[in-house]
Structures are given as C-alpha cells and as structure tokens.
Length: 162
Image (tube, rainbow, N blue to C red; front, side, top):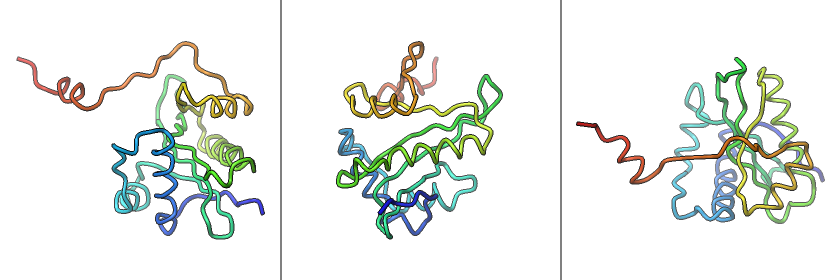
C-alpha cells in the first residue's frame, strides 16, 4: 500500500518523535537531541504561529516518513522560502518513493503559500541523499557556504563588549 501524505497532527507525536530520533541517530547528533513530546506539542501544534510544520507519510495508521519545515517569511525576492529542516523515511519503508511524495507535498505547500523557493541542507557524506535530491531536479548551491554558531562560540559572541 502506498502511504498517504498529510499534515502531521498533535495525535501523531508519539510516532513522529521516534522518526526524529532515528534521523538524529542516522546523522550522528543523537547526543545533543533534546526534542521530546512536550516540545513537539507546544512548538508545533499549540503555538500560534507554530515554530515548525510537518508532513507525514501514513501507512494504515503507522508513520513511515516525515518532512519537517518552516517558513522564512521575507527574502530578497520579497517572497517567503519554505525551509526543510528534516526529511526522513523509516529504513524498512525506503525504496517506495515516500521521500519523493513528501518532497512533492512540500513543493505544493510552497507554491500554495507563494514561496519563491525551497531550501535545505544535506550532509556532505550523505551521497545517497544528494543523488535523491538531484533526481528531483535540485542542485547544490555553488555560491553559499553553510555557517553556524553553537556552544561556547555562541556564548562568547553573546557576551557584552567593554
């Protein structure tokens, strides 16, 4: 059976969280993974507007994939950008085009919301992910390099200057 793709609901949290944990394990950041059911409930389903949105692949009541996204409301093009934060398909459900169906649903959401683009990052070691995205027509950004601050570097930069 082909799973249905639909927006996640608060009732999905008990199945959504394990998918998020599985992605954290796959991408080797489980040691800093701090998301729990209460955080998902508050930030994704009770906060207005929510901090994130999610699409899920539902196979007869069992979630087998998810795509978590949010909107960057203003860009240089004067149109919002849909930013994909997480895309994950359970290992035993891979090879069934679930990831593609999730990406197509995200593209429909972006078009419906008037977005000018969809953006995301993929780890340099994740060559199968890169091939997947390229098969869908995406290309790596040859101009911009992804930077970030965390931990001590973030704290140091936030310190007041004399």
